[in-house]
Length: 89
Image 1 (cartoon, helix red, strand yellow):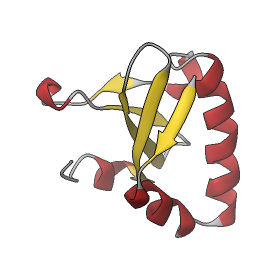
Image 2 (cartoon, rainbow, N blue to C red):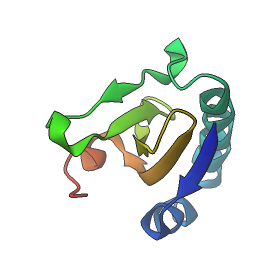
Image 3 (spheres, rainbow, N blue to C red):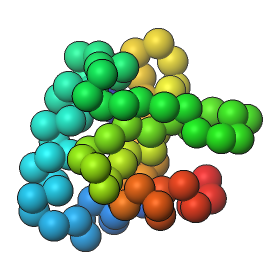
């Protein structure tokens, strides 16, 4: 899986606590092998017309992404669960 990141994602990531950054990297590695691995709890976000998905970093944090093709994705945002579902993209 080839992963691209937006400037907003980079900015969000840089503000995270170090512990969350480590967890995010671990989950990213799992995601590269299988974006639907059970521990990621990958889910399609609503409304479905946005074509956005998210996966779990831990119980509090999630990554929002979009598929760009069969083996390419773009990470859009990373942050607390409640915040992720309120952002516009």
